[in-house]
Length: 344
Image: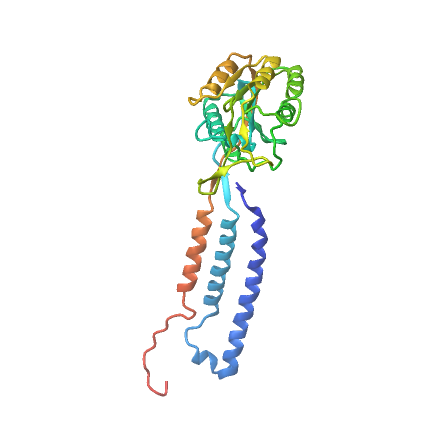
């Protein structure tokens, strides 16, 4: 047995506070009656009143409040017998996704970024035993999701990818490769795959140099290029998706985002990976997964955490029942007397 929200045990101070209040209220009530009719006449005028009835009503209130606090703390029991360690075989895969504004170009429908996210979702559906991580990059890069076997969690992180995720503009592929390389287990010299998904317009660094360092660390890089080599304008849309125009440079010229296949091909080549150009069918990641399936796999240990079942419904129902019973319980006993004359 455990409590999901034990911090609410701090509300237990309400029980003694309520007890003090009920005792004080009862004494004040008795004093008021005595002052009104006198202590001698009070037992004759207040018919059927018994101290035991008030004690019972106070007990029901206190027990109801105590059970309600217990319910708020969410008691739980183990649904399975402890945590289980599961061994799997696979490789570590990190996907670095370009979130720069150029990925909004619509030469691939609905746009480059949305298409890339769809392909990543498809890859997550196919993974079996491989750990996966996510890196977001534009002018800067960071690990959005560290390596995990929880593909559901990876999907949640993937949903957060958009062009507003990183405020720094640009496309720093080299920095993304460096960030992703640091997210792998450094002691291992194999079982590491990096998938870079971008339009290839690197404006910030030396991606090929970073790729060579990654290759020295045993990382194989696969690249997927999005867009057209002859360029595509970057649309600007409002919150409803209506087209407002196209992105322009400082001179007022429409910016054309062009796919740079050369740099992506070289990054893949120096690490022993492959380059693929994104297509409407979205088969690129399937092909990469087929390549990954051929690689030597390592044994990965993962822990299946214990599942817990909630039991707050029972104390909550008992608390409600006790408070209803207290409300229905009269302060005085029902007394039936037979008329014995005026001088009884």
